[in-house]
Length: 165
Image (cartoon, rainbow, N blue to C red; front, top):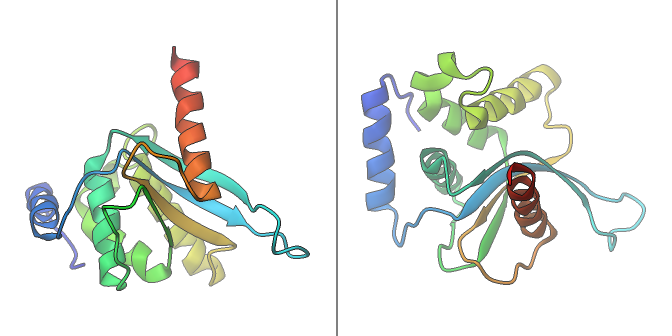
């Protein structure tokens, strides 16, 4: 994505993504997780830790993530109940270009998705790798989930809802 200079241009970008992406729909939930695979047994369930979760919120961030994936030639199938995609340095750079007008405000409790992307990109710049496998996970339907990543995203959201109640 090109570097977005203003908040107004950011809003226009979001509208364009939603209108011009075939079958686009906002995810019910999405998040970024770190996946640690068992090096001794590939059949073991990976350890999944969520850095950020979103449930019926932050749809602009979701749209940016989807657009960044499409630029990496990763198709997001909105008809699936879930979509799990690896995060690359190119994905992070595209997201940062789009989030540019909001980056100065990304601290404390504001813009947690941007803070996460900034942290992962800095880690990539400082260490030359993403230190494990990071994935972005989307849930589009309230249906039985297939992956460990999507199941743990739903569990994280359900747990947060119970804590707030």
